[in-house]
Length: 632
Image (cartoon, one colour):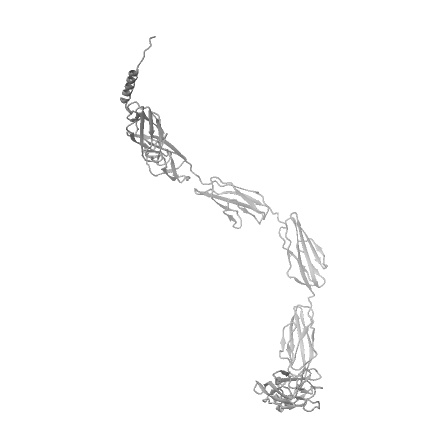
């Protein structure tokens, strides 16, 4: 093989040729088309279907950069959103019910570089195929009632509506609004909707609700009386209210599952009417046979709870629930003709007076019961009048009586001859007062339905001693003679200011007003009294100006006195030495100072006294002061 050698000129030539080739290459010109074309109009596509983009760029690009939503329309989503394929296929979604515009761009590149342009196209995405949805109000109806239908279909731009109401009236419609239809039987409603992107169909089943069919079951058909019975509602077709009638004493209920009881045995018809919004049911009834399962209740009556001894008494049985029962009577104490009986309504009598007890026991298959009545057996004799009273009382005083009569109950009528109140119908009258001395009597008449009786007792009214003096007034410190007359020794009361305290004549010297009364040996108080009032003159205090406590019993004590010897009331005396120290204090005007202080003889000298007292003459509290000289 012959080798060929190239020199420098050859390599330069090759390089020039290569540069010439690159200088003649061209960058791409981007372009594209969209296929298939929209069923609507050019550049309009249905959401949810494949959209094919075909590259028509020039100058043989080798790289493609697609953006299917370059303006970022938030209502549109492209899948994929970008692509590097030459001829990509994309699916768009539209979240609204109106057309949405999106901008698609393409940039291309080849060995010469990037394209000088960006291919741009605006396309329109329709909402896509509609979804048929039926809205119905109300959802449940009665026969011959109406439902309002409307379309709630999604993915708008619906161009056609087609309703088929089956057996409803009307049966067909193309309305896009509300359609009201009436039904007599159950039906199926169909709605077909369509647009340029497709069609869809929905169905709705109309079920007619009938009125309820009433039915119920009691938990027992043969209950005992007074035992609750539960009634369980079995009605169909969704009742919403219930009307029960239990067939006795107006017992009704509006509960679904009520409870009732029957007090009286017998057969009862229980009826239920159930209702819903389509109307009431026909009445449905069943019978309940109530058994008598109550235990007996013993009870009997008598004409009175108070009876007479040895008189026949009828006992009337008023017990309840006594079917197939056995009676047992007992009588206490013993009666005639028997102490016990099994008769329904026995008659007997009691032979002794006092409390009596009768008991009735009823025994049946359902239990037993006992009733006891307490009677009072009376002697039924006329009463005997008896009473206690005082045989004598003092004139001007009151007494009482005690009724001890026999054979109660009875009425009482009292006669008090010579008393302030002449009669009384009380059982034990009191406050029977006599103003005049002498011999009187008390009479009692007692009466019952069997007769009456009376008793009279004497009563002596002892004369009261009499005060012969009249009310009078004296000055304090003076006396007055009082006189009285009575039987035996006269005793005066109170004894304040009296001398002596007994006798027909006494001397009264009270310091304050006193009301006197007297008694004599009969212990009767005087009917009248005598009042001795006391008047007061002005009190004048007298005190010496010297005293000599030398133990010779003459002028040994410094004390005060009153002129006329009148008493000194609310007295106080204080004595002070020359240094103002109190050396003596007293509240008794009869007490004086002996010239000592705490047991120590005081020095001769002048002492100051302050005396306070109430002058009853003008009822003023007064003070006097002065000097007294102590001489030893």
